[in-house]
Image (cartoon, rainbow, N blue to C red; front, side):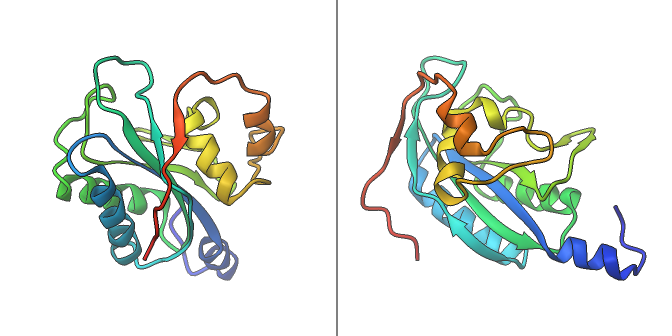
Length: 180
C-alpha cells in the first residue's frame, strides 16, 4: 500500500476514516483512556473527528478480572495501517502495557477496528478487526458515533448488526464523562 506519488492513491489515503477501539482494566482506567486519546491525536498527527461515550464492560471470555472501560474514536489519517499499528503499540507500551496475551488485564488496549473499506490480513494486522461484529463493547460505542457505518465485508450497518445480536455481556454507559 505504499504510495508511489499517485494522486489517486494519495487522495484515498487522505480520506481514510479509521476507527480505534480503546480499553483499560488496570490502574486509573479513565486516565489511561483520556491520555491515549491525546497520544493518538498527537502521535499520529491526525484529527480526531469523534469519540464515543465511555462504557464499563465485563471482560469477555475470562473471569476474575476487573471490568474494562471502553470507547471508540474516529479519526481521519494519511497514515497506512501498519504505521498506525506501530504507533498504537508504542502508546500501549508508554502506558505500561507489558502483557501480550489477550486474556490478561491491561493498562491499555488499542485496536484498529476499521480502516476505510480496506480488508487486510497480514501477520499481526487484520482489518477490519476480526471480532468487531461479535463484541457489544465495540458495536455499542461504534453505533453511537456512526450508526449507519457499513463495511464492504458486512451486509448491514453496525446498528443493524447490534439490533440483531443477543449479547449478554455487561456494557453500561459511564455518566458525566466530558472530553477536553
